[in-house]
Image (cartoon, rainbow, N blue to C red; front, side, top):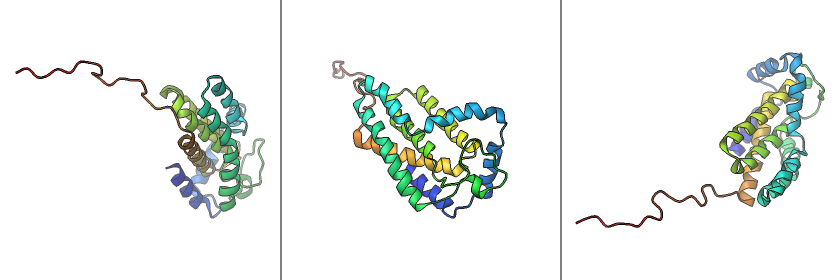
Length: 204
């Protein structure tokens, strides 16, 4: 599903243009009040390249070896798939180069914007952690990933489909790593209802 969403987003932005609906969403988020800059700037740091390695430290302490391996592999795979494959096929410039009236908040105005590398990292980390955390903590992780993507749009670094496509790339990489290295089996050690009870024959 994530790979299909990546292909769909890539095809949509392949012309290099930003459609009217996407531009309207970008303008709305990008022109939020300036007082939100500091908190949203902090959220965008969740997508820097070193985050998977930082998350791998507690996983290493907890001896989650497969998770440690997957988080370590996420970094080079991000550089390969995001930087070489997808950006090599689709090149859409940053909003500051192709849109008017863009508010830039400490982000570059030029360069290839699709897909968002920050979104690749955050979505990849969420997918890798999903088999290891309880549902309520998974919701927190998803919210943090969404705030990271919103922050990149607010700062003026990416248009909305840049972060959606980046999140799809990250989810696809994370799902592939989960498949390759393996994840804990859910429900292991839980006995089925009635297990261990002596079976009885029906009365005559």
